[in-house]
Picture (cartoon, rainbow, N blue to C red):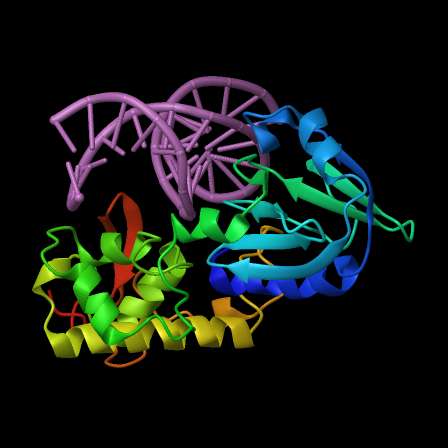
Length: 264
DNA sequence: CTTTTTCCCTGGACGC
DNA sequence: TGCGTCCAGGGAAAAA
């Protein structure tokens, strides 16, 4: 559930803790976290490495190492680096200043992997950063052209744009006034431009508010949930036209939209 | 190639 | 109160 704004918030939290530090000790308690490798193999690769930067690409955290490689962390649904003791601790980093950085993940979907060439690895599975120069209307139009999948499915595809999940997909479509079931290939140029703008605005707002906090201890301390226009708002009035928000299922995901201003 | 479906996992919500 | 059932969701993998 952490999406781009939440992962960015985690990145900002980790950066001052890790940058410049050496990984003194790496304990991986849950073998699933690093499959198919064994925890001991991953720990051995990481121990003794120095962290030179903590970056983000899409929903991945990139813990860059002095060797040129990186630890790639994907939080999936419930992963996170709590600042206080928490249950479901799946791994712990001990740094050369003696500090402990615990990783928790209730549902155990998150992954850690060591990549020798992280940029190549990520480039092969992710489209452009939505807040970077590559996410142009022309690129988005090309990605959507000819596709018969619902536009919501298309923007959840990380190769179309990196970092959207179910929440920000719905918020982006609301801002763009597009029905989630519209066929991706049938959008007009003007609608594609609106979609791009909706994605950018929704994510920038999410980052500014330090992400959403859904009260389950998974998302951070952000306040984006107070500004949701669509997600989870069944029956509540649309902030544009007052029509009650409707829930349906698109691409196998709960999807909320305004049936009046997001026209099918 | 595309699109859809299944699966992984846990805790919280809900019905009886 | 205590069960059983359903649901949430990212993305890999399989199926179509």
